[in-house]
Structures are given as structure tokens and as C-alpha cells.
Image (cartoon, rainbow, N blue to C red; front, side, top):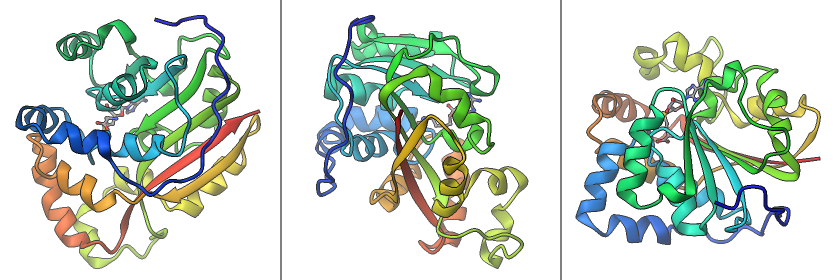
Length: 259
Ligand SMILES: C[S@@+](CC[C@H](N)C(=O)[O-])C[C@H]1O[C@@H](n2cnc3c(N)ncnc32)[C@H](O)[C@@H]1O
């Protein structure tokens, strides 16, 4: 691993047309699709990672914190696509399980699997990472004013924070649409927010500047791939996505530069 190596600071690159060559090639194999169906924990994290990273400049010299990595689909993408070194950190999935998976994928030499709870502080040095990358996880713990300021110090100055999360097109407040009411429990209401809501929260954080907050284009595709997953949660989400009918949900990506 390239731990300790000084790295060129990550710069943002101009938006390209969104294409997913890595994901498409990966999913061209039936065996890989089976692997994805078993490893997805929400909208296809490989596709989200590919779209999010298409807005960044990532290279093999970078040390990346993949926070809330789940079963490591984003980690797999970051290692295979860029050769970067990744700390694959998660709360619900054990580092042992992820290590076994990373070994089977042949990427264990580039990945440190680690158990963390982002709400309880992270066990890293300040300025340790070039990039904090988090896909379909940040909404679970990032909805407070304290969370972003607590993470910024782990990213070096000039480094990048890049986050992709499920969201909604506008804040429902007390007016939850009738068709969404069966699915709108307290946890969903706490975690799913609009671009404007996240923007207001992020504007309050010192030590970084927002580069870009936008809707992602892979929303429908990433969600429909998730609905084919073997997880019982995917089966439950089928009814919700039918009710939603493309009217309310989006995927949101947020990028910021640490200053
Ligand atoms: C919906 S899953 C997505 C996992 C993976 N990123 C993916 O897209 O396949 C959400 C992930 O967030 C992680 N998570 C939730 N709360 C967390 C916390 N406080 N600290 C670290 N990870 C957390 C969970 O462990 C879980 O793996």
C-alpha cells in the first residue's frame, strides 16, 4: 500500500457525459451479476461510485476512506478502476467478512477493512486521507450539524469529500404524499432529504468549501438493479418504488474541497 506517500492534491474535473463503462463491463458477466445481487445493500453502489468519481480526479497514489462501505462495492470500484489504497470502513458489516470478500476479489492488498461507527469518532490521524468517499451511507449518520465538521479533519487540506446518497426532490414536511405514507416512518423521514436541505446543512461547516451538489443521473437504473438483489430489504422496497413511481426520489451527490 502507498501509505505515507505524499500525493498530488485531488482536483475536480469537468463533468463528462455520464457513462458507466466499469459497471457495464463488470455486469456483462453473469457471475459478477450474481456477486452484485448478493452484495448490494441499496441502489447499485458500483454505479453510484462510478458516476460520483467521474466528477473527481482519483489516482493510484491516493489514500481513500470509503466510509459506510457496506459489502465493499465502492471499494472494489476504487481499487480496480484507479488502483487507489482504500480503508473500507463500516458499522454493520464486519471487517472479517469484508476481508474474506476482498481476498476473493484479489484486492485485499490494497484495502484495510475496519469497523467504525462514524457517530463515535474515527480512529485515524488528522490529514490522513486524500479523499473521503461515501456511497449510500452518509444519510444514515450525516444529518446533524456536528457530523461533517467531525470528519473534515481526517482529510488533508486540498483533499476532497465526495458523497452520494438517496434523497427526495423536495422536503415533504408535514405533507407526505398519500402514496408514500405507508413507507414514511421516522427513520426514512430523518434520513431522506432534498438538495436544498443538505446544502443548508453543509453551508454551516467550516474548513471546507462546497464544490458541487447535484442530482445524479443513474437514479432509476441503480434503484432497479437494487430491486433484483437477494436481500429481503430489496423485496420490501419493490412496493415502495412502485408507489413512488419516479415522482419523489432522487440520488444526490455532494462534493467539497477541504481548505
Ligand atoms: C444502505 S447500506 C450501503 C452500504 C454500501 N455503501 C452500499 O452502497 O452497498 C448503509 C451502510 O451505512 C453504514 N453505516 C450506517 N451508520 C453508520 C455509522 N454510524 N458509521 C459507519 N457506517 C455506518 C452501514 O453499516 C451500512 O453498511
